[in-house]
Length: 401
Image 1 (spheres, rainbow, N blue to C red):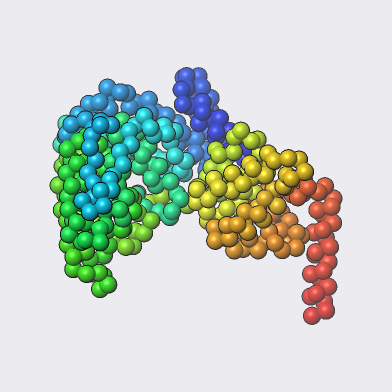
Image 2: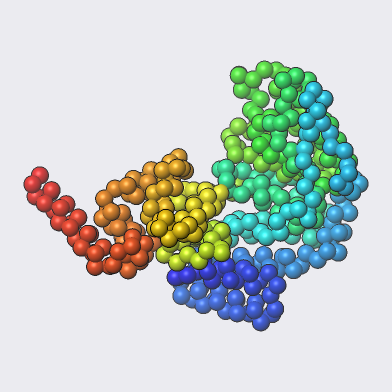
């Protein structure tokens, strides 16, 4: 569906404070898309409606009652943070709900709905208690760098109205191995004393496979200390672990986390939605958003955001210095070669006709000659002639062969 990224953004904004009439129109649009066979777009709107329902259901009083089930005293900005005895460096950073961006991270409908269940459990703490079930208190979030794992963890804490004790686990590792175990103990003691979400970033820095022959015995004892502290905290507060390298984690670490959430790289529609999200106040044509989404296949949200920044800079400089979209993509591919899929990068620097043909024939892009001409800064007849000449050359090469 053309311009769906814009429609999605409008629906997301409308549902933030939707009246029953607005909600009804979004539902009608969802049903119409489903009837027309646009099941993926319909699922996206279903995710928006579900998220809006959950946000509305989580009233302050219900969250306050859920928070009261977490043991400990209130964490204030004046609370002394534990430090490394050898370096005096703080072992954690405290982030309060008011300092966290309230808008939900952008994920596909399946991931968004799964995240919603975590919030739901805490919003319905009392109902779960009546059947002797408690909300999940441990969550491991894993995936490629730049997929939004840390932002998601912070957003969950913001939704629960709890401060975050953010720990970069590689910062706990001391050259004095005995100090590392002590750092872990001091950190958990601090978190367990307060009502908070303990966020363990770069979890693989310590939680390595214990049978790794390259690791000394003391490191294995450090891992054991971490596991023991996780067990104790499970009955105290909410803990989130984050890792880019799940294969490095000890199997015993996996068992400590009730929720194990993988954040995938975004598909085409999500890449387009991410580009549209970061584009304002610049207004980009839908064809540009689609090509950015196509060009960033295999990329993460952070990489797409970086490309959008490059695009915005290229469209706001002096007229004589402005770049077209293809030139902007070539610039980005040159400066970020490792972030761009090799096949896409090769097309950018190949004969333009090969790029035009790939754009024309890709069913996901669904570009017309007019779309390609607008992107390339040519009229559609010129694009058509270039494609025709390229076909002619290919035919001659086959004949001569």
